[in-house]
Amino acid sequence: MIFGLTFDKLLIIGVIAVVIVGPQRLPQAAARLAQLIKSLRQLANGAKDRMREEMGPEFDEVDWKKLDPRQYDPRRIIREALLEDDDDDESQPVVKPVSVKPAAKRAEPGAAAPYDSEAT
Image (tube, rainbow, N blue to C red; front, side, top):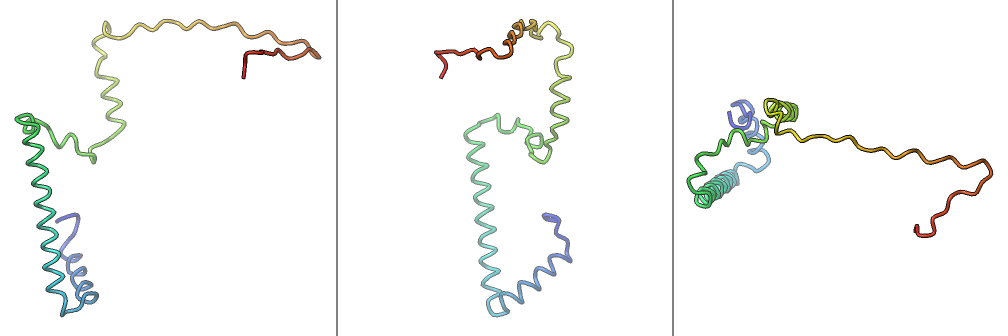
């Protein structure tokens, strides 16, 4: 199964292609499709070879399945990040309390509002 396509689906796609393209032009369309797939495969292999060449021996050490975006689960990533350094309490930053400024005094009813001449 490629991309979730079963034999039934491929057969339906083939019948639709025959109806849309027509039996006279179907061989030419199939040849163009095969050429497109071949060029895409060559492009992908060229990119892979270039990456292997630029990364050197580290390319084979990379766990590519771990970098698959389909494996992305934000809950798992956060859980691992939170549980990662529980054993090292010494490496945790020390949190200092923040000083809080006293609340501004309320103006008397009927008094003019404070004005800052330097404010824009």
